[in-house]
Image 1 (cartoon, rainbow, N blue to C red):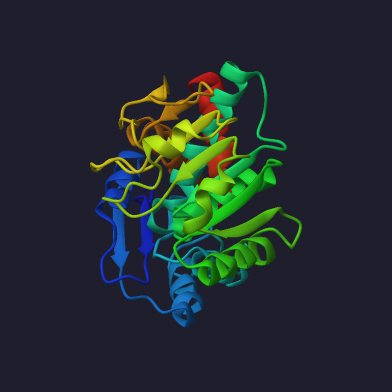
Image 2: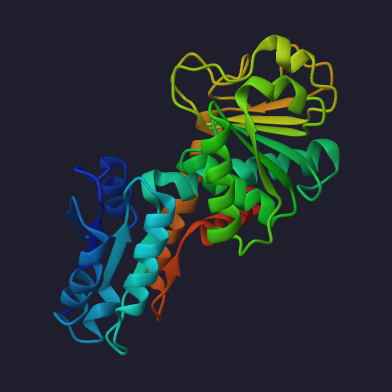
Length: 302
């Protein structure tokens, strides 16, 4: 008899995201089992409990999902999980803390598409501001865009924290080879003079980019806002906007809203969860894989 599909879902938070549970079940996992308040030191033991409870054949119907709130911690847990496998006792593992990896992938893929179809250009060499960029989505988006050749500035209310996050992104996620810098929110009007793209990835209920600042940005091309709760993070961007002209822009900038980004995020997460089921060999998935899938989806619609 075929073993049921079981996804063991680990989080360092006190609750597992219901969003991730729904996504797992809709992707074909028969059972999504939550493990909350997980300590990183517990990963090896949990992983080996998973892999030694089934035969190598049965493990093809078994997987591990890593949530939580911290991008570096999630990637460290993914690495520990991989190192805890004892082939042929091995299962697939997918890290997506706070949905940040798939959300960031959807946002960057949507921006890349608009740059291509509306401005006949790419992310390479573009100046990007990640406003409210010190959180998980901002971090992941900065790394993804920088890996595609963009110059990214993570902008936060506190310059010191923004600098620490920029250093983390460069050193931990980019091997020191990425062009990610830091900036203070108080100086964003100056940064906007050379910005091509703006990501708004801050907390809900805070407008990060005003009409006045939009009008004063001479080379702005695309803005993307992941906030679906009013007020918008970027003035004039509706959650449903998907390449709509940005009101007040003198440079012809286009806006991408949270629900348009969310659709790509949903598709990327769904496809990666299905890949865990369908792959003959164990796969270890994170933001780079999410972006590859999101990119393919916006190009082909499949």
